[in-house]
Amino acid sequence: MIGRRMLMGGLAVAPFGSVQAALPVPADDRLVFNIVRKGDKIGEHALTFTRTAIGLTVAVAVDIVVGIGPIAFFRYKHRATVRRRGAQVVSVDAETNDDGTPKKMTARREDSGLVVEGTNAARYVAPPKSLPGTHWDRAMLDAPFINTEDGRLMSPTVTLVGTKKVPVGNGSVTAQHFRLSGDANLDTFYDTTPSWVGLRFTAHDGSEVTYLRV
Image (cartoon, rainbow, N blue to C red; front, side, top):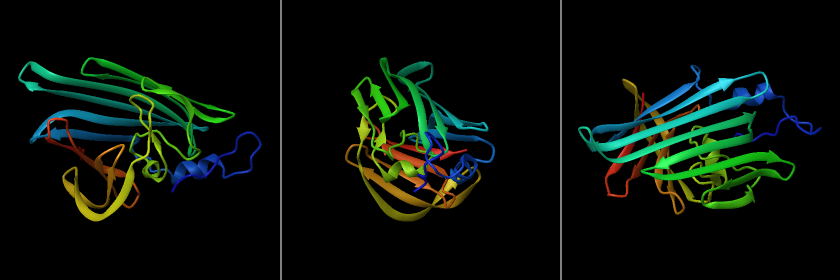
C-alpha cells in the first residue's frame, strides 16, 4: 500500500517528493476512460492531475447520458476535486447530479483526522488510511474508502481474482483483477505501475457498464 505519512505538525516522515513519485500519477497528468454500455459509448470519466511543489490536485469529471438520439432517459454528472500532500488527503469537494438528484460531500484535514460529511453521511472522522473512492490510487482498496458522491464510508470485501489482459488504447496490458462486493459491487483493474486501467459493473437495469481507458 502507498500510505506513508508526510512532514506535517513536526512529525518526522518521508519528504513530499519521494512520496509523490511513489503515487501512480500518469506521466501526462491525465487519465481518460470511455464509458461503454451495450457496445455504445454513453459517457466519459476523466481525471486531471496538477502537481505543485507542495502537493497534488486531482480533478475528476464524469458525464453519462443514456438515451435514443436527442432523447435522454438518464443523465449523470459528477465533479470532484481532491487535494493531497503526498499520500495524505488534505481536502475533498464533490458535487453530483444523479439523474436530477443532487448529492454532495466534503472532507477536510483537521487535528482529529480527515473529517467527512455529505448528503448521506453525518459528520465523521475517516479511518487513518482511508482515501476518497476516485479509483486511480490502488491504495484505496487497502482500507475503507470514502464515497465521493455522498460521503458514505464504504467497506466492501475486496478479492484479488487474478490477472487478465485489459484493453488500453489500441493495445492491451496485463492487469490485476480486483472484485469488490458488499457496500460496493464492481470489478476494477490495475497494471503493474499500479495504474488504473479499467472498471466494470452492473447497472440498475442489469446491463454491464465497462470503462475502456483511452
